[in-house]
Every structure is written in C-alpha cells, then in structure tokens.
View 1 (cartoon, rainbow, N blue to C red):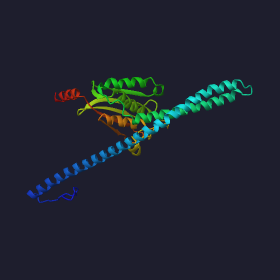
View 2: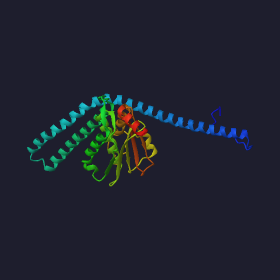
View 3: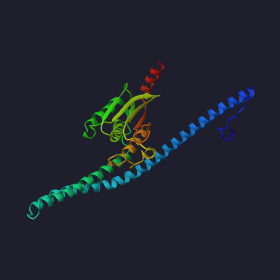
View 4: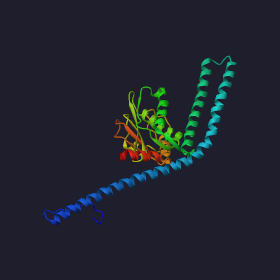
Length: 298
C-alpha cells in the first residue's frame, strides 16, 4: 500500500482480532483506492479544460489579426460585384445580340460572388466575436426571462417549425451576467440542439439552482454523438451539423463566454441516435445564494 498498490487485499480466516484488523485495513485501502481514482479523473478533466482554454486563446489571438485583415477586402468584393451587376445589366440591354439567357447567366455569377463574399464576411465576423472580450459589465439578470426571450425569437424561424422546444423554468433565478453574451450562449445551444433533431424531435430546457449555482440544461432526443465528436466538440471550426453548414465556431464561442463568466459547460451523450445533454453552470448572485441556502435549510 505504501508503494501505491491499493488493489491488494489482506486475507485472514482466523476469526480473531488480527482478522478484524485485516478487514479494517481492507476497507481503508478500498477507500484510498476510490479517492485516488476520483482524483485521477478530476486531474484528467482539469487538464483537458486547461488545454482547451489555451487552444481557444491561441485561436482567438490569431482570429483577431486575420479577421481584420480580410474583412475589408471581402466587403469591397461584395460591393463591387453588386455595382457591376447593375452596370452590366444596363450595357446588355443596349446590345441587341445579348439574349435573355446570357444576361441571366451573368447575373447569377455576379450574385454568386456577392453571396460567397458576404458568407466569408460572416465567418470573419464570427472570428472577431470569438476573439473579442466585449463589454465585461455584468448585471443581475433573471435567467428565466432571458432564456424565454431567446426561445420566443427562435420559435419564429421557419427552419425549426417542425421541431419542438419544451421549457421548464422553475422559480426565478438571478445571476450576474452580461445578458447579450449569455443570450448568444443560449441561442447557440438551442440551435445546436434543434439542428440535431429529426422532424418531430424535442429539445427540453431546464433551469434550476444546484449547490449555489444556476444550471441551464439543454437535452435533446436527436442524433447523439460519438466519443470522438465529444472529444473535439468545443474546438474551433469543428462542426457536426447534418447539413454540413456552419463555421464550427458557435460552441467554441459558447465555451469561452461561459468560462469568462466563471462557469463551466458539461456535455454528455450515450452515443449516436441517443440524444445529447449540455449543462451550463453559472455563479448566482449573493442574494440568490442566500435565498437558496434558506430554502434548503427549511
């Protein structure tokens, strides 16, 4: 045991004081083994979090420089293509030989240039959001109202009309947050859950307090995730959307915002086809913690 071999057990069948001592030693060794295994798992999890945070910080530093450099050229490309579309339309109208089909082909190509330029511009703006610390001011915010507001906004999107959100808010819960950033977190996790659903699928959202902290849980009965996906889920540019779209920055930004608020985000899935659960934990206000403590004491 002194050498760390906590799997060893003493076996005595003398049924005397030495046998009782051996049983006591075995129980103590079993507890040591459980504590050691628990600490090992915690160290591994903390190491993963530190590595992930360093990766996100590195990407954020790179993103800030790259996005600024390419955003302006992309905007110029899009605006020039838009201006060229109207100019060419006027020129082609004056050329009798130019048929309607030719004019439409040219318009389609110019619109494609515009659309792709604006799409790339959206990606760079996402990179800037990822790297930007933003307004660090935080205010006591009712999380129930915040989450409900995001749900109401998403409910109007036609993309998700055949999917369902069920919200169990519980009592009012107040936490010191930057409301705009936390809305982005909730929106990212709601759309992430809905994207994983088949038509008729359900995303359950629960809001509660636990051990002095606020918990917002997002549970879906969608496509689920493999261990490999779970391993890379919060890495920048990693995406698991069925449609193959998206920049893969949403969950990375979500992870950074939650970490900046002094919270953490846990994710679990039993495997492909078995749904997923994301749980965001955030510190409560001092008054909310006192209220929870009084409630538990009662």
